[in-house]
Every structure is written in structure tokens, then in C-alpha cells.
Length: 326
Image (tube, rainbow, N blue to C red):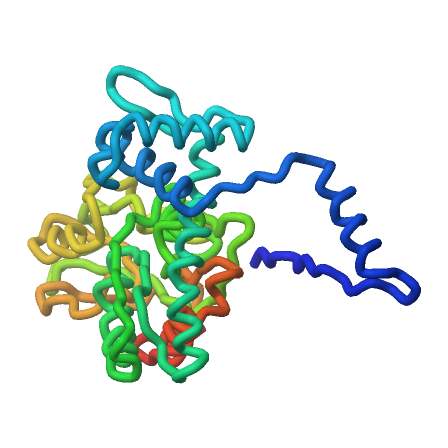
């Protein structure tokens, strides 16, 4: 797991005045210009990226288009990079713009958390929004009991759950981009944890052979698959199984796979969370001691990991016993 290095400002050494320490800081800052963007400038950058245009961002923020354009140009000048490609169809972030907007979202989230953290430290309460990104089966089967306990223990907490496909950047990418505070992610897969984030494993779920109940020869059925099904280690296992054919039917998600198998259209290899509450029309068989598994864990930023809301959510996730822990 990637860990963030800690940067600390050291106290002056013996015989060194506070003034000399400040002068050293000034020399260090000469390495590059300081970028001092105000929160309202960050919000404008986020709005332009979200709305994909200056006019739409202005409408969303209650500003004029000229004010938005002026602010973006000022931010670009301070940063020293073009953040958006302008065109007749709107504005699209450049590579630099995507990075800047991701940082802007994370900074604004910390500013939003500031007041809630202060109140929590004073009154001993956990409150405010908690944005969670989760892949489908985790959102359906892992999160509901966790959220129920969170709401009961912390009535002022406001969880928001977004279902994100666990392909490409996946749920961890939502945290890296500043769109989520906490992700429920598959670990060590084709959706790796982005550099600079932290997390931990919550459980290890086994894969099983799933086929229509009562079928006389289920291995003869075509394979039904979906993009999120496999980790890299699972694909290695699949490649070594001569009895598993190439997928002849691709679906959008694991729910559709289960529906296809239930209706007799094929068989599948599926992880435990996806099989929670499976109908009696399917049969689930253990794949034996060498069966593939995948790890499911949480991912957050180093800054948000210490906030009251995220800490409370991680505690409840670790306490969950709906699936055997790793």
C-alpha cells in the first residue's frame, strides 16, 4: 500500500533564531513560484470541468461567463499551465487541468470538513457528508448494514453512495479525483490504488462455479462474463482451467450474469458478494482448495483518513461480519 511521506516544519536548532528559520523557508520557496488560489477560484475550476463549459459553469455558480473566464485565466496564469481546451463545443480539461481539478476537489473537501471536525472535537459528534464510491456488489451487499450502524451511532452523518464500475480507475480513482472520500475497491487488480492514497484489506471473497440448478451437464454451457469479474490472479487461474470456455456472452454487470445463469442461458465463475441472495434457480459449487479469490478493501486519502467521518466508516467496515474477513 502506498504511504505518504510526512513533511514537517522543524523547530529552529540551538543557536538558530526564528528569523533565520523564516529566511530559510524563503530561500526554499525560490525553487518555484507560490501558487495561491482562493477557494472561490478552485470552485470555478471544478465547475468548469464538471459542466464542460464556461457558460454552464457560470449558470451553475450564479456568475457571469466573463467572471468565470477571467477567474480561469487568472488561475492558469498563477499555475503557469493551460487548464482547459476551449472550443465551440465547450471546455475540456487538459492533462494539467485534470490534475489541478482533482487537487482542487480534495482541497475544497478538506475545507468543508474543517467545521465538522471542529464541532466534532468540541462536542464529540460525527456529522456532515460522507461520500462513498463502491462497485455494485459491495454497494448492494456490503454497505447497507455498515451504513445502518453508522446512522444509528452518528445521526448527524450524511452518507452518499455512488456505484462506480471497477474498471479503469475504478472506485479508487474517484477518491484520487476528489469525487469520493472513501472507496470500497478490489485490491491489487486491474484497478490499482493510485499513488498517494492509503487503504487496507477488509475481506477476501472466494469465487464459485454457478450454473442453472439441476442442469445435467453444467460444464457444457457457455460462459457468461462481465468486465469487472476478474483480478489478474483470477485470470491466470482461468487460463489454467481447460474446462472453462471463452466467454460467449458478455453482460453489463454481475446482476445480469446471475439473471442469465438463472434463466438457463449459461454458467459463470462469480465472487461471493455477487452471489449474496442468489435465487434457488441457480446452484453454487465450491471450486476447491485452489479456488481463486479476490481481496476487497477501503481506499481514502491520507488527509481524510484522519477525519472523524472516514474513521467511523472504516471502523464499521472492519467490524462487518456479513462476509468472512481476510
